[in-house]
Length: 300
Image (cartoon, rainbow, N blue to C red; front, side, top):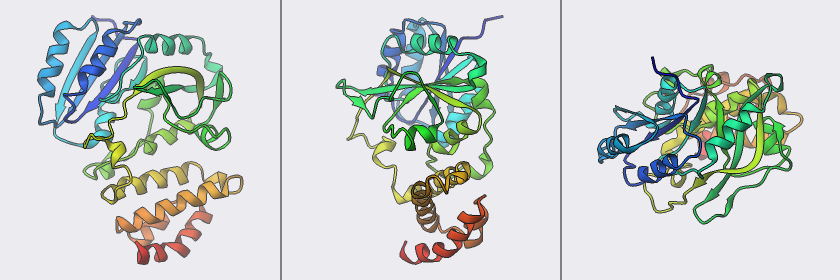
């Protein structure tokens, strides 16, 4: 019986055969080798399968390849969580790369954390391919906080990357039946759940290289707020509001701004008035939605 790996790295991929070699090369150079790489091909029409099979022949770590008809990244991501065998779990986009000591840094950091600290995720910094920091550094190291406080108390902006416990990911509650076949779903729909389960342990180490492929038509960063993504964006705002409704008095501007996003994209998505209101947990936010949603329906 084969021993399970310490880490699972998951890469959902759709027509990214041209960028996957970059991911593979960075994994092949890792100083920590006890990991598996799961590649889930989300219905690609390019030569992704052949590319990954080539990797499997020369890699010094386990690569598992799976194919399914196109379901979009979000559902593909959670299939990967179901398949993950590592103690720790990191998602790695199909156009990213890692510095050679990234996995080692993350595993050693996890090993230094006690269970009493209630940590669910180790968060690190990102650089672009030109060596420029993407977003802000953390104000201290380690910074132990919620995602909400990271963004709105400490004002830390920009992309972050890291590693969570696989068991935490597997505990996340989502209604996949309602989300299936609805296109792009932002990661916030599950990431906000981290704050219900514990804290982020944030360190000022660069562990991910984010490539700014601005001309890549398949890059979600270039089409995030398209109206065609209205369902997923409405779900993202709704999840935020339901996760942080208790912040309405301490952070009213933040909650109201997200309420505006929820009502805007719910209107574009042609959601029923009653459902828009009932899908919110907070009585105050329900009342505000009832007041303003008819306006958004008119101006959408």
